[in-house]
Image (cartoon, rainbow, N blue to C red; front, side, top):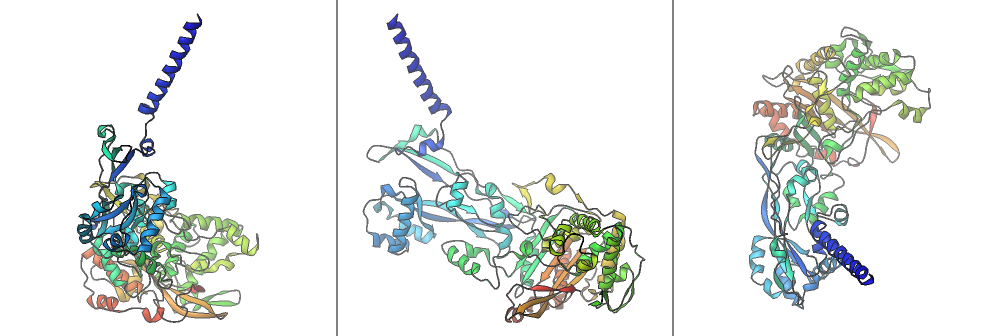
Length: 622
């Protein structure tokens, strides 16, 4: 009986061990277990990164072959360091530092010793690599740009860092990942999947053949081809117009929310961040804290929107029923807040909605703004209503676009003012500057372009986005295809749009009309102040312009913001008109204006003392 019991126990234990080992070997196997085995070496095969095209299938980003020198530290044998460094084009100190970094990461896993050899360097080195045990050459692909524009949109790729490695186990040291822009946002689509071959090694560390006869090996899968909503021609044209100027331009297609161009000036050629000079070039660009070429002004610059904001206050006043299009308000070459007069350049007199918009009358919109708040029992109630209307246009929050970063601007709330003035201790006169796009209101260029899309569509917009196709197939994502409705009824948009059209016909933008295209737009001039040695000092004004066209069949909505651009129709208005004509007609007939904008720069303004410093805006804008 005891013998039977003992035999049974031994059999049960044996079956348990065999079952457990089988489970671990068959069902719980993972590539990580192979990588933990010192007798197995992994050789990776990297796919080409996905190509990037514009909305018209024009190539933006492709690939060029490149070669990395890899090292497996524990396999390195004594070598002629100086000779090897000479072949690699690096000094001994760089070699020692890179080898030490590789050992720290892993003594048995491959690491990059030297990045991105050229084809010429590779050809010279390849035939001599047999002399250097523990080193081998890994073929990769580098980005090739078929455009010198769109650096802020396309982004760049760079080597993964310790944070990337800890966050995502897919990567190993030396691999590349999207760092900004589209390259970052759609990294998983663009990178594809690397292949791997497992090699069995004997006790003398010699290769003896594929592990498990190659049953675990995988082939690389190329990154997916994607098409962006960007118009390559329009993007390149806009960047030419921005040479010598600082600011942002965003153009959208109102009927879809597709981003047609997204320009930040000054910018840089994206090819500067490719190859062995990438780190050096990036450091130079990043350290330019005056021009800030790596700072994307199109989605990061938060500025008071100025007079373009008046259109929204007109819509809110109409929706709240406190005015109609015939309501008149008198302008005394400005308006009074208590005994203090705020200025206006419209010429004074009685203003209705149409003349208030196309002449950009500050007094008219200050009066309409007060009427909104006077409708309610308390300022808090009025503020809640005003804030809700404004945010329905996508202001004061992230729009939800498919880009990896941005700023949300600001639409102040009652809580915001309570912190400054105290609860129930402020009124509409305290915040009257919000009536003309000043005060505490902030917006980015992409938010202003989206605001104009909502007006162009008479009450709705589509979330701005930049991805159009994957592998040639259109993207159908409810996030970007379902309209977002504002709180303003459709019937109220007609008189406001008529006023915006008259801005071009007979108002502040009549000098930049486009032959054959009816445009609705609004100029803005933001006064620019800063403190110099404790003294409030006025600098050159900023130029703002928003528009959409054609009025009755909008194909493009655009926002242009030019730092130190004097006034709305001088730089921003001119550039917006050229961009609109270029997109709709495919050519520009305003040749004299084009020549002027291509040649004119504002470098003399930016060279002035303190021009690169942060600024504060005056209490009002035109």
